[in-house]
Image 1: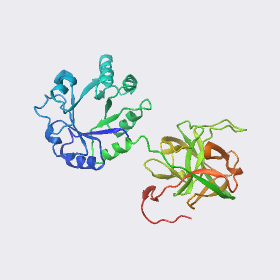
Image 2: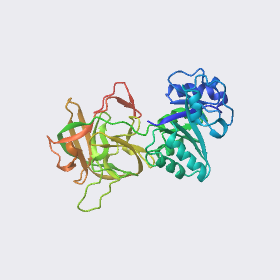
Image 3: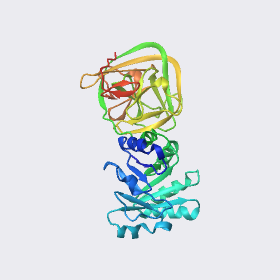
Length: 367
């Protein structure tokens, strides 16, 4: 999880609502210009004092972290000697090569580095992240909006350790927190035993083409029901009549579920360019990948029934073709048309029912 700092220094009349939302969403830190604005915050949120362009107050109140501009306030290390109970960080505004070097130095040496990049390209941030690869401090980058925050979180695949953003409206804190969830968490896969297969005639199936190369033991989870899915492998493995397409998963019939972010499901039919799906490997490791397009075409379909160790049944309908494959224990690549009762495949059993894709505790029977 990346760090989310919410800057309330200019929120005006929205401050109360913004702070309430931020605390509810468990935003990591609230940033204010004066100690009084931090006084009523609960202990669950880190209190950051950032008196940009102003003198430091005589007392820091309940502030946990104070961000200073050395040209105005003095060096963080010297201030830390005078106030041993406070963590100090350095603010750097990057406008040229000299200030970029200052940012690199801060990222290597400071506990907290708050960086403002004036150049719209993210190349300077890439340089700072690379320069501080082995450092123990945290880089907090200022973002203008949630869209920029998402980009900052992904720079050089590592991303900035955190983002500071000034909300423009109630709801921005929630969006920022969602953008920070770059790792969706691992899943506990189960071995499913195939009980039956059947040719079920023609229908529309979806190939999910992503903007990412899948690994050989990786694919996406697909199922006819929201509480049971089978791991469909990408077209990473050689085929006799066509080149490999390691960005693609020939996933299943259009009404099938797949997992997206925040435990939400999506129908294959509603995925489109820019959508997110969860890539999953045979050990349950996950990552979010971006959909580039979805190819929906009419094809013969094959139904696969399987059962979990707890007796729960799972169904998957996919294209009835030898080259469409699923994954089994030990990362075995299994041709769907060759599956037979007794074979083992890997799957996942979500525990909650769904309402418009979101997990919810309610009664829902699917058959």
